[in-house]
Image (cartoon, rainbow, N blue to C red; front, side, top):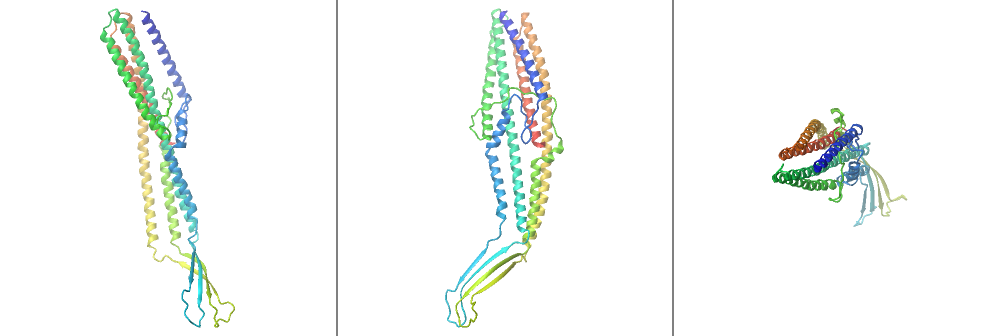
Length: 431
């Protein structure tokens, strides 16, 4: 009976610790719900690991660096278009001089600079700037997607770690049951088969734990790849999480400020700037220059100035302007296309938001249900333990209750993970 009393004391302490533990994280989530970064990531006062991992990923992810470089290139385009056409220099030399009494040219030099119509360069700068702005939105979207991916991997790691802890507790519980079975076997209240079944169940749980360890390594490697560091570098996660009482949601109207939609607005503006540039380029170009002609001495030239300087004016007129009218039609079609793409993407975002809200609500329902089931399973376990005092205990029932408890615990962990993954998606869409 000493062994039984020891087991009861251990079970009592475990129940007390569970109640205390649950009350702690329930209070914690009622008082502390923090969002950070572009779309407010959930993290907890007990751990800053998610925040640190996200910061590290944003600073080192190669894809983010790629978008930043592309933005740098697009920004430099502004300087590229802020220039005049090439200046033309011409030099002509008389190779063979005919014998004539008339004064002959020795060589001629000319320079010509074409100038675009007034405001054309400014229009080019505005167009290049609008394209750079659209590229900058791509950086914002990429960072938000990266933060979402880091969060999703993090919550998957939490799920695996929490299940490992639950398996450890259940293995320890089965070991306690095994001791009870051995004690019962000595007094004829149990059979060797009961002991073997308990041992087999422990082996199954150990196998499940080993599989989870490998899964953890795989997801950890995927998370490390987002941070551009060694695949096997350790990642720590919070030890416990719960579901807050209130859900955070900004409403469907918040979708309007999503960068994925804002990107279409910037593209629309770039097409408008492209059309303004097209109108400027369809105007004439003016050219100014000067030509110098050097001549041989000749008795026919009585002036002291034998050489000639000739100012020049050139006009380039786009008489055949189908190119520009076609470009105008294309720009109009592009604007309609962008509007359609924006509406399509908005509808998809609404659908994704509805799905995320639904799944988050489902996870809350599952969490509450599993909590009730766990309480009832614990009551059933207590009844079985009390039956041991009267000399009747069915270890098949013990295994069934243990299996149910483990199922409920894992379902509850999955509900928590799903809740926060869907919350991260909701915040990505609406913040």
